[in-house]
Image 1 (tube, rainbow, N blue to C red):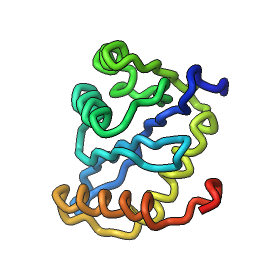
Image 2: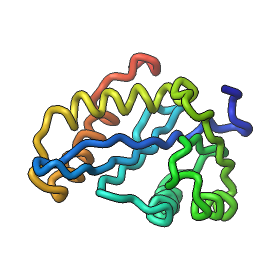
Image 3: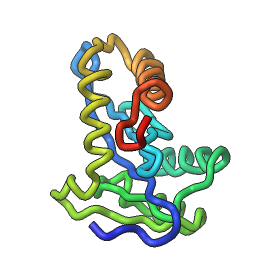
Image 4: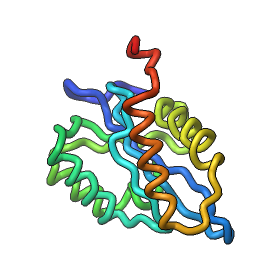
Length: 153
């Protein structure tokens, strides 16, 4: 995959699914800082609209500078008009990986695999209210306590 334009590396966005005890599926969208190997945002819900995702990125921009490029999969929430208009408003380029080529998004795929194996698969979710708290706790632990070999920490 070509390196994104600009001085900053990319924010990478993907989602992972799990289910509640009653079998209803939910999703967790994650935005991952490719440079700092940090999960900067997660949203957990049954459905996550494109407007909600764009709003979350706007809130993220209040606390940290946005990268020049956001790398995305090709899901409908990420290829929508809301994301297009958000990118224009925020001055961020959207870079879509090729369909069926998850290795173009390798860090987030690896992150989501760790997240699924060490968080989602380890817990029984009685209801959706339990999931966001648990996923946020895991995200904080991942960012603050887990060593990042690639960064020498």
